[in-house]
Each structure stands twice: as C-alpha cells, then as structure tokens.
Amino acid sequence: MSDQKKLKIGIANLMMLNIFGDEAEKKARNYFDGAVKFLEDELGVEVHTNLQAVTNLDEARQTWEFFAEKRVEAIILFNGTFSLTNLMIEIIRNSNVPFVIWGFEEYLMDKKSDTGSMIGLMPAGMVFRNLDKKFSFVYGSIERREVQDQLKVLFNVIKAVLYL
Image (cartoon, rainbow, N blue to C red; front, side, top):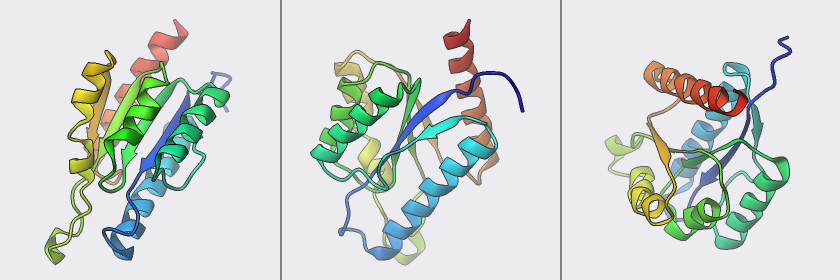
C-alpha cells in the first residue's frame, strides 16, 4: 500500500431510462460498473458515485452536491445511454474540477438497436465552451486497452497538476 494520496474521482452515469429497453440499460450499467472497478482496482483512485443512474434534473443536482461534499478532484460524466443535456449542464456549471466525458460504441448495432451514448455526448463541447470550462474525451468500453491507457494518462496528469 502506497502512502501516496488517492485521487478522488466523482463519476455520474447519465441515462434516460425506459426508452432503449432493458437490455440496453443493463449493458450500460455493466459498462459503468466495469469502469468503476477499473478506476478503483487498476488506477487506485477513490471513486465516489451516489446513484446507479442520473436520469433527471433533481438527481443531477443531488449528484453535484454529493461531489462537492466529497471534495472530488475530477468528474467523469459517463454517458450510459442518450441523456438530456440539462443533466450535464447542471453538474458542469456547479463544479470547478477537471472533467472527462465518456461515451462508448453502440453495443447493440447488430440488433438494429442503439443506446444513443454518443448522441447524448454530442452537445458536450458546446456546453463546456459556453460555460468556459475544459474537458477531456474518452471513447470506448473499459475492456479496450487504448481506453485504459488514456485514463491512466489523464489521471496521472490531473494528479501531477493537483499535487505539485
């Protein structure tokens, strides 16, 4: 066990329930759970999440308040399915930490059914620009090596900046 301070990460799973079907929601939750496990086990960060999914404005408010209470040092907006832009705006405008937005490949394309993960993230650049905030973007499931490597680099940079 290292005596080095753990980076505190908040992660919110932005979703719109009851629109894409149970299979899509289950897969999105599994991707989210896998991401949390990787962050904790492989990157050794302290992960804070208060809800299985952020689906409405009240939950978005609860989420940023939870992150503020926990004093997270970075936030991941994980887009499990298509989600409403106002959920993202509520969290972003009330938080002053580095952000990572994370989308993943449409895992049900072969069944002609998708979750809209990337559609939910498409307005993110506009949101961040209008709020004068910066973000990093991650694309793909945690099983992909390039995603793991990108997260390692991002969080090492955040740690370096915070702890210097």
